[in-house]
Length: 348
Ligand SMILES: NC(=O)c1ccc[n+]([C@@H]2O[C@H](COP(=O)([O-])OP(=O)(O)OC[C@H]3O[C@@H](n4cnc5c(N)ncnc54)[C@H](O)[C@@H]3O)[C@@H](O)[C@H]2O)c1
Image (cartoon, rainbow, N blue to C red; front, top):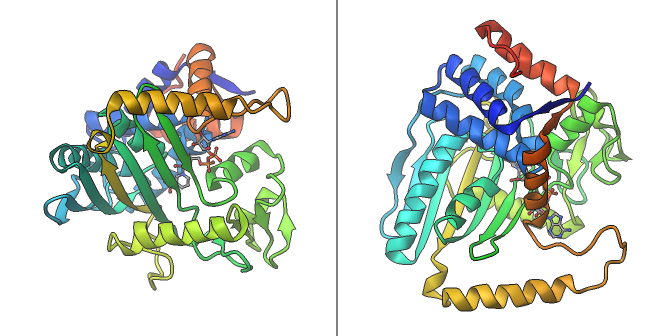
């Protein structure tokens, strides 16, 4: 049976869980807030369903609790950080705070973070910067023990789902945040856990043939995810690898590393104070006009009107704050299995 969790109670439970597993109360809370907020935004792929993977990486010694990202270079508008293989959410939060301070001083900041374990939903960092009135662009690479996404025209996996994100602040903030795979790997995991098919065009089998079976990502012989949007999505996935991996100086696909290292992200962020370019009032008025204009396009399907980036998440957040977060039975039992050794019980 699907569990429906209240977001605040779920945050307390997840905080207690990470604290029991060795994180400071502050670190545990940052991870819990991030994961539950991802569920609230509708991205269950990057919500509490990641806990079993995080615990796997913790037990294997890949993720190191309570790390502080080290500044390894950069001056002026530039700052480079190494996440020391700590949890990605607290590391990326610290780097975004530094980027905000630099952007306020210089008008722009370019930051990189390498060697961070999974940073989760990238939109959370753009939202953190939006709250400071800042515009941001993020390019992220991911490396795992094995890649999962095949290049366009290829037939085996060579990169991961490398997300790209753009956040625009203002009276009505806009947020575009997606994996460059046709669907996020976590969404294949959700389909696998639910026992349902993956969307058409999102997967290929071990011979490069299209399939909708999520099993190809979790059982031998392994298949691969496809990049979205044919050559364009593949091109974006490739550039995210270059900016998030090569330009951060961190782990990257095909770097020759053959062991296991958890699920590691590198992120390049470009943060801009929009007031250096345009008056805030003009930005708000012009964006409102633009949104009204595009949304006036008659819906091809009356049940699915035109949306703008960030709208789907805002609607889902309101709905799930009201009615709770649904968690499928497989995911929930995996989370409870992580909590059991610490004597933690499911939130009532
Ligand atoms: N840390 C990592 O390594 C990693 C890897 C992959 C993905 N992710 C995260 O996974 C999450 C989910 O990614 P995804 O690819 O499944 O997202 P998705 O396919 O659901 O796309 C989400 C984006 O599309 C926008 N959108 C949705 N419907 C729209 C519409 N009708 N019109 C205009 N815009 C619309 C949303 O507002 C959002 O910006 C993201 O938050 C991403 O950062 C993280």
